Length: 493
Image (cartoon, rainbow, N blue to C red; front, side):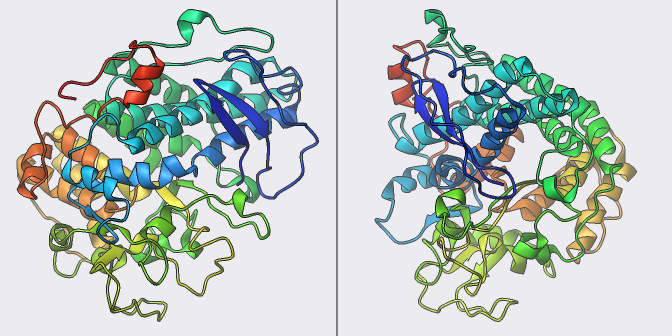
């Protein structure tokens, strides 16, 4: 899956050119430009069915953008948590120490990068949602493309609301020939509740239209299962447990299945398998490395051997695994070990541990740099089972909770949990969520916050977590300045 290039002028995205899903091709359309800020995309684009497809493809491509999967994403979602430290060597990207220590300020550039990356995705989705309805094209395809755009708008707003709280809700762009009203150029922050309501609406709309599956050429697109699974996660963060149980039950009836060998999930050969519900796609295009822009694995690869060595798994994470848990060796790559592929990790690597889910054997093609082909797993069936277990336990359905939980445990080579009190089972499920999803989809910090345990857990590791402040990150100062002060800062910053 490839992407449309884009540029950012203040809050308006300008579509420039497109690469098609499944293979590179040269577009006949000239670069599009917008002379004035806040003016709709030029009339020469968004006029054909192919334009609609290309515009949706651009949303997928933006998922791999540096700010969405590399330093900014890893710093905010993972290095802040108890699962990982900065890693690499002292002094390299020293600004990441502020995330490790939770001493972040509003001027930290990674915050602004993350904000921009998410809003780039939102604006690309809004370009589709505002313009594609006006195109004369196959109506079934049009409805599906609009549903895909709604899924991604919800996905990006979910990332933003968990990180910053309430954020500006931008839901449209000017149509061709229109200029955006001046009062829309710098929107105030919507409330957290308003943002969550929009996310829920978008995912509900998307799930009503998206297909359960696609043909082989389109298997990487978002499905009904992806929309329902993401909606379940959103409802979980809102503690709407009956909704979570209902939504996960629907996904559990769609034919997904756990991959027998946990390690296989994270290999290139295991991409888009029976457990996969949604992955960010990566693919090296020989001779055109710009078309494969995922550095998620490269940033975390063993320094001195593969990559840059950031995101070092903590000893606390190592100790969280039960004896015999097969997920430990599949999640953490130890200095000096020999991988299942027969490759020895160098003894001189600066960190004692690395993220094995980001590991790609060195003999795999690296024409465009290390591990550019490695997909990023965002939602798997195992997470759906754990959400189902958590919701069932909250609702007092112990047997239902144990059934879902034990499917995950047994795949990991562990004995099933036979009985537990509701409180004990809650703790067990939270623990399973940590070790099942560690270093994978960036939920750990947010999970600790929603569980009300962030201060307790992170302070115990020496992080400077302050209750009433560090549950959220500061609004980037650059965005406050651009808004002319319309955006208000979060408490404590």
